[in-house]
Amino acid sequence: EVQLVESGGGWVQTGGSLTLSCAVSGFAFVDDYAIGWFRQAPGKEREGVSCISSSDGTTYYEDSVRGRFTISKNNAKKTVYLQMNSLKPEDTAVYYCAADRFTYSSDYMPLKMKSPEWDYRGQGTQVTVSS
Image (tube, rainbow, N blue to C red; front, side, top):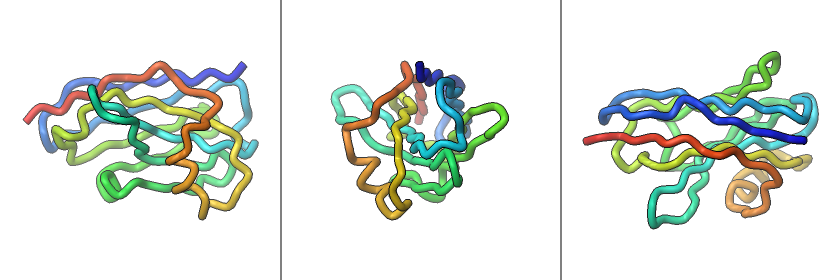
Protein backbone atom coordinates (compact mmCIF):
# COMPACT_ATOMS: atom_id res chain seq x y z
CA GLU A 1 0.00 0.00 0.00
CA VAL A 2 1.38 3.38 -1.03
CA GLN A 3 1.27 6.06 1.64
CA LEU A 4 2.38 9.69 1.55
CA VAL A 5 2.71 11.69 4.77
CA GLU A 6 3.43 15.41 4.70
CA SER A 7 4.96 17.47 7.48
CA GLY A 8 6.63 20.81 8.00
CA GLY A 9 3.79 23.24 7.45
CA GLY A 10 3.22 26.20 9.72
CA TRP A 11 3.00 29.94 10.02
CA VAL A 12 5.64 32.30 8.69
CA GLN A 13 5.94 35.98 7.89
CA THR A 14 6.33 37.34 4.38
CA GLY A 15 9.83 36.67 3.12
CA GLY A 16 10.30 33.73 5.43
CA SER A 17 11.09 30.12 4.65
CA LEU A 18 9.63 26.69 5.34
CA THR A 19 10.61 23.19 4.31
CA LEU A 20 7.91 20.62 3.68
CA SER A 21 8.57 16.88 3.76
CA CYS A 22 6.71 14.05 2.05
CA ALA A 23 7.56 10.63 3.47
CA VAL A 24 6.82 7.89 0.97
CA SER A 25 6.16 4.21 1.58
CA GLY A 26 4.89 1.45 -0.67
CA PHE A 27 7.18 1.86 -3.67
CA ALA A 28 10.89 2.08 -4.32
CA PHE A 29 12.44 5.32 -5.48
CA VAL A 30 14.25 3.44 -8.23
CA ASP A 31 10.85 2.85 -9.79
CA ASP A 32 9.49 5.42 -12.22
CA TYR A 33 7.17 7.58 -10.20
CA ALA A 34 6.45 11.27 -10.36
CA ILE A 35 6.08 12.88 -6.95
CA GLY A 36 4.42 16.24 -7.06
CA TRP A 37 3.59 19.02 -4.65
CA PHE A 38 0.24 20.73 -5.02
CA ARG A 39 -1.57 23.41 -3.07
CA GLN A 40 -5.13 24.52 -2.62
CA ALA A 41 -6.31 27.71 -1.00
CA PRO A 42 -9.89 28.17 0.26
CA GLY A 43 -12.24 28.86 -2.61
CA LYS A 44 -9.57 28.22 -5.22
CA GLU A 45 -8.76 25.33 -7.49
CA ARG A 46 -5.88 22.99 -6.92
CA GLU A 47 -2.61 24.41 -8.20
CA GLY A 48 0.47 22.48 -9.15
CA VAL A 49 3.69 23.62 -7.52
CA SER A 50 6.55 21.30 -8.39
CA CYS A 51 7.36 17.76 -9.39
CA ILE A 52 10.31 15.38 -9.21
CA SER A 53 11.05 12.03 -10.79
CA SER A 54 11.72 9.40 -8.12
CA SER A 55 14.15 7.52 -10.37
CA ASP A 56 16.35 10.18 -11.95
CA GLY A 57 15.57 13.32 -9.95
CA THR A 58 14.39 15.41 -12.90
CA THR A 59 12.49 18.41 -11.58
CA TYR A 60 9.82 20.80 -12.78
CA TYR A 61 8.46 24.02 -11.29
CA GLU A 62 5.40 26.07 -12.03
CA ASP A 63 6.10 29.69 -12.94
CA SER A 64 4.58 30.98 -9.71
CA VAL A 65 7.28 29.34 -7.58
CA ARG A 66 10.27 28.97 -9.90
CA GLY A 67 13.32 30.57 -8.34
CA ARG A 68 11.81 30.56 -4.84
CA PHE A 69 11.01 26.89 -4.20
CA THR A 70 13.34 23.90 -4.53
CA ILE A 71 12.21 20.29 -4.70
CA SER A 72 14.61 17.50 -3.77
CA LYS A 73 14.63 13.90 -2.61
CA ASN A 74 16.52 11.67 -0.23
CA ASN A 75 16.50 8.14 -1.59
CA ALA A 76 17.67 6.56 1.66
CA LYS A 77 14.90 8.22 3.63
CA LYS A 78 12.37 7.90 0.80
CA THR A 79 11.41 11.47 1.39
CA VAL A 80 10.73 14.35 -0.98
CA TYR A 81 11.31 17.89 0.25
CA LEU A 82 9.98 21.26 -0.82
CA GLN A 83 12.19 24.12 0.35
CA MET A 84 10.15 27.31 0.16
CA ASN A 85 11.95 30.65 0.34
CA SER A 86 10.79 34.25 -0.07
CA LEU A 87 7.28 33.23 0.88
CA LYS A 88 4.39 35.53 0.00
CA PRO A 89 0.86 35.75 1.40
CA GLU A 90 -0.44 34.28 -1.86
CA ASP A 91 1.51 31.10 -1.07
CA THR A 92 -0.93 30.44 1.79
CA ALA A 93 -2.68 27.13 1.17
CA VAL A 94 -2.92 23.49 2.16
CA TYR A 95 0.04 21.78 0.53
CA TYR A 96 -0.05 18.11 -0.27
CA CYS A 97 2.13 15.66 -2.13
CA ALA A 98 0.93 13.13 -4.64
CA ALA A 99 2.51 10.24 -6.52
CA ASP A 100 1.76 8.35 -9.68
CA ARG A 101 3.55 6.04 -12.05
CA PHE A 102 5.36 8.16 -14.63
CA THR A 103 7.39 6.50 -17.34
CA TYR A 104 7.39 9.38 -19.81
CA SER A 105 10.04 11.90 -20.71
CA SER A 106 10.44 14.81 -18.31
CA ASP A 107 9.15 16.98 -21.17
CA TYR A 108 5.70 15.72 -20.18
CA MET A 109 5.97 16.86 -16.56
CA PRO A 110 4.09 20.13 -17.20
CA LEU A 111 1.15 18.13 -18.57
CA LYS A 112 1.37 15.67 -15.70
CA MET A 113 1.14 18.51 -13.19
CA LYS A 114 -2.11 19.67 -14.79
CA SER A 115 -3.63 16.20 -14.85
CA PRO A 116 -6.12 15.28 -12.09
CA GLU A 117 -5.05 11.65 -12.36
CA TRP A 118 -2.63 11.01 -9.54
CA ASP A 119 -3.09 7.63 -7.88
CA TYR A 120 -1.87 8.53 -4.41
CA ARG A 121 -1.92 11.66 -2.27
CA GLY A 122 -1.23 12.65 1.30
CA GLN A 123 -3.49 14.38 3.78
CA GLY A 124 -1.92 17.81 3.39
CA THR A 125 -0.20 20.34 5.62
CA GLN A 126 -1.23 23.96 6.14
CA VAL A 127 1.12 26.78 5.18
CA THR A 128 0.16 30.28 6.27
CA VAL A 129 2.15 33.34 5.25
CA SER A 130 1.23 36.56 7.01
CA SER A 131 1.76 40.01 5.52
